Image (cartoon, rainbow, N blue to C red; front, top):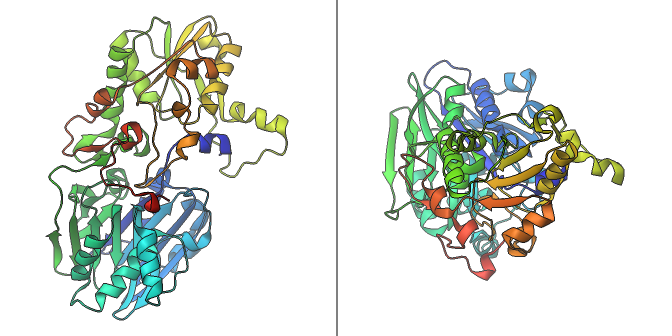
Length: 467
């Protein structure tokens, strides 16, 4: 994808998927399909680690799931347990050593670990461990967790006892999958900031960042891993350890706005319904007289349908998305860069010409893409283009698992909403309120983190802990 689109959206860092196979399923193939279903959560690297009679074998590489694995590679991955991982680039870091799962030997044997989230005290823990003689091969928080876990493992009888102690020390967001010679362990941070769920297929247990991946492999969704919970799957079945957790969790609300697949259910709420509701509430809060409602593919489409239903203004297809542009597409000249948006999106002239358009998108981060899309629509003959955003303005960076620009690069920090509208060429611009957004995950059994909108971080972030 062209870098302009990459820079103008928030990005989740990872997706995790794991299987404790008590049946005769092909573990490697199921993990591959599970990761394929989670590809939207990370396109930088992919990996699978499998437990083969106590020995962990693995393959991981830079690239999409379909690029990293083929039939030959999967045929060499045998075993009854597995964990898989997809990763997105974090703050420009694009290095193979950061690919997961992380596989290492320690005093009790082999261990593999996959992590979704971000620790705000990772640097401090890393420095402390380095002073004690630990050597690190990557910049990933997963390696910090693994090193801390192996350190605690020396003191405790079981890996889960060690993990309880580790969870007392690490600060931030994490959904973890840990594989040892005899166990598959899942854990979620005490605030439940990143999603993690449990599924079952016959007698086999499956863990995934999203329910959509469970359905892809034919598993039945059982429940979400609770905030602060450690879940262990082994030959005896499944058991749970509940560590201390606050009364109110703080799931990242951007999962419902943009990150998660629309067919997933997170902490009791349907993602698709949340986006539909966002559009409806947006229409009530920010009405405008127009002829057609369109959405920016793909993340703005569902909210656009909701806006159209609530407002009574017809919904239509206004932009065509080219789904065949390679992830690493590079423009060799300035002229080509100017055409990048048209290669990614193109307006339906017959639909927008002579009409007043309401264009729905999920967010505005830098504003560069919005500006080019508005120009395209007006070049195609749109009389007016009114932008409505199904989330509030983004004023603050995230430290808990979302790769966001520095605050100085967030357009809302420099201009008023009216000024942003003028800069991007829109006839008007309006956002969903924070109060409205919190109402969108209907039936959710969790609280929400809205720090990127209001600066109310659920965990205090010290200056020395900022990444």
